[in-house]
Amino acid sequence: MIKNQRQYETTRTQAARFEAALAEFNQSRVGSDLPPLLLQAEHDALESQLRDLREELREYESLQAGERKVLELTTMSELPSALIRGRIAAGLSHRDLAERLGWKEQQIQRYEATDYAGASMARIQEVMDAIGMGIREEVLLPDALSFRSLNRVVRPLGISSEFVKRRLTTGAHRSNAARALSAVGNLNRVFGISPAELYGDVPPRFNLAAAAGGRFKVSAGAQSARLTAYAVYAHYLGLLALRATEGLTRQSIPTDAAAVRQAVIERYGNLDLRSSLAYVWDLGIPVLPLSDPGAFHGACFRANGRNVIVLKQRSSSLDRWLFDLFHELRHAGEAPEQSERDVIEIADAPLETKTSPEEATCNQFAGDVLLDGMAEDLAQRVVSRTRGYVPAFKSVVPEVAHEAGVAVGSMSNYVAVRLDMSGVNWWGTASNLQEKGDPWGITRDVFLMRTDFGALSPPDRDLLVQALRACKEITD
Image (cartoon, rainbow, N blue to C red; front, side):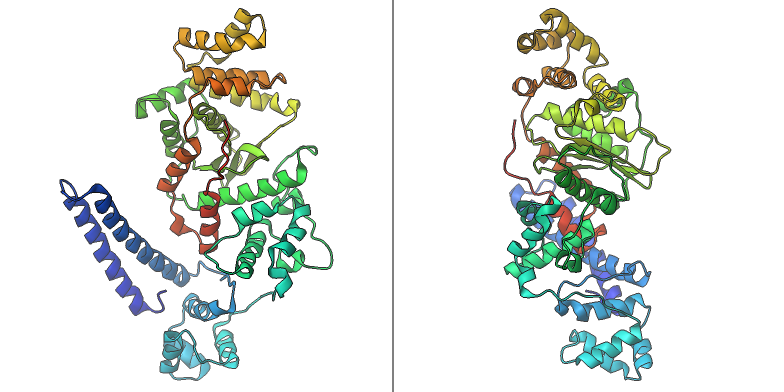
């Protein structure tokens, strides 16, 4: 942590030296006889140290600029560093603070050098008053800091114990109490449920309108509590993704399938998942992959005029992920005049939702991008040749795809979508005709390469990193 201007200048100098060292290393590694893994390890070590220095510089600059209004504490041991950050944010030097307190400047320097070791609570309160800081802190009793107690409270809200441990417990905490405390903090951060509300006399009430200002339109029969909770969680992560990708250049989003198909192939040489992700990111739209089961399989959130796409398939089918990516891209291109907009693709949605004009348009768009503008025509050929006998689709779909020169996997996926809109589940057969791989891993790796995690606060960064840890069970 940088505590004063002198340390700031020293850190800037160190960062410049690491930048130069990293550039020199990158030049010297070309043609090197050292093993590639060793070279990569040395590169990663230099890059990690440079990243840490830059993060310290960024935090100090943010405090000086008055951009930080709230400092979050999870334990009282973090209070000394909060006092130092508060002084910097208030624009006070050691001398300024000493004059306010009527102390010697050296006393402030000694306190900060030792992180206020030995300072009484009365002294700490004096410093806080002089800086103008305030603390609002709940004291959690031992029973609250157990997962059993926590899970008992959040289960009626649609938040499972597995979700609490897998997604809301962050940080390298050793004790169960510390882990539970991190989960309590994240419940407050993501869902706006304070510890006092969690453990109050009246059970906390949680609904979509309260948690997200009525942003999402969800049918009453769609696993409402669980879907509500996950929608708010995914929306929060989407906002973090937007904050961590501020440097992306926004482009107008094309809604012409032929133009999109041509652009992807011309720029990247093919229409696979990695190339298509690159195209969407180059439009200024981050694509966030999640891997939790159920709730929904895709979403498009818009905030302050920027879109973020969330893909959450549990399938290993590259074709299915590719279709969903372009489906959500079409949603992102709708109603550009609206600065805020949200669409959630609910798992097991009612038929009227699947067949809505908006969904039909997005399905047609994704199909035409992947099937060269022939999606509906090819689907009708299959129906005509089989006379609508669905069991025969398995052999006829590949025939039609080969004749038209399109990918069998994309063709089978579109046919499955069209059948699904008619209430017929053909996904299992379609999956057997599709190319398998690690679409979640591909989407995650692209996200990691293009995202500046240093732009997030440590608690938010931990939440996003935790969300990018895959669930083990991936289905076909």
